[in-house]
Length: 300
Ligand SMILES: NC(=O)c1ccc[n+]([C@@H]2O[C@H](COP(=O)([O-])OP(=O)(O)OC[C@H]3O[C@@H](n4cnc5c(N)ncnc54)[C@H](OP(=O)(O)O)[C@@H]3O)[C@@H](O)[C@H]2O)c1
Image (cartoon, rainbow, N blue to C red):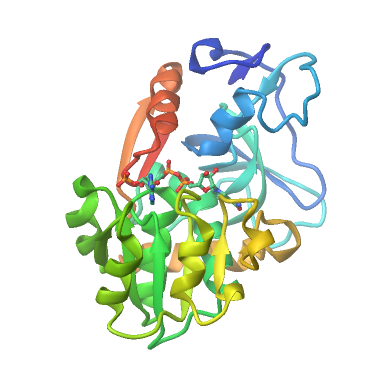
């Protein structure tokens, strides 16, 4: 099969789309023939060596954490999945012709493959954030960075729960935030005052999905520091905010089931831009720029 790969840390220019060994579904896993795989910031961070813990690179590495496709292997112990099923989900090395998924949900038939592929990481992360913050109907939540992959999904999932959502973006994405159901505010200087004015009262939860605003500013909006949760500012814990990187606090199968249901009901709409796999470097460059609207998706 072919897969996106690299043999030295670097920028998008070191990526190649070439031959690779086929993965196989282990216990509790499924393998899919990939129809689409999304690009997440962790991909170019991994490519740059930022996730290596300072260790030198050995051999060839592969990329991608979510995808959608057709099941062609079902691992030991997996029930309720058959070869030929259309799935979306999360795994590793998904930017390839075949990928193994660790968590999945049935792809709604009405949803495009590329949209389904975009839902894995963004959907699981959004569900995790809203659950850890206890967001419920009637709450007011501020999502800092509402127009990106995680942000746009989190905004819509919070709206679907009946929350009042205030979200930040650049000028270019203010209308997009309105489309998603949020009250838009500009990020940057004066953001805290704008959020307070938009909330018209206390903010019950702050979900920082960009990691750009000083955590003290975000904490000043909440009733208590622990009601600020970040996925992108790993120093925020020192100020009393909560940080989540997935792992033990992740409920991926429940999250993906919720995401698939919202997609099927059109309560979650993911704006996508697609690129053929051999042009992955272009998608990585755009992602690195930090101003993605919705999601970037690679397709065969
Ligand atoms: N810890 C976890 O479990 C986890 C999971 C997934 C992602 N992440 C991390 O979360 C971050 C976001 O991921 P993503 O996939 O949503 O990225 P993305 O799709 O690239 O989105 C980036 C967004 O950040 C916004 N932004 C840029 N500068 C900002 C600022 N100063 N204030 C507020 N928003 C700003 C941009 O809005 P404009 O275009 O309007 O400027 C853009 O919409 C990345 O660092 C990623 O690695 C962590």
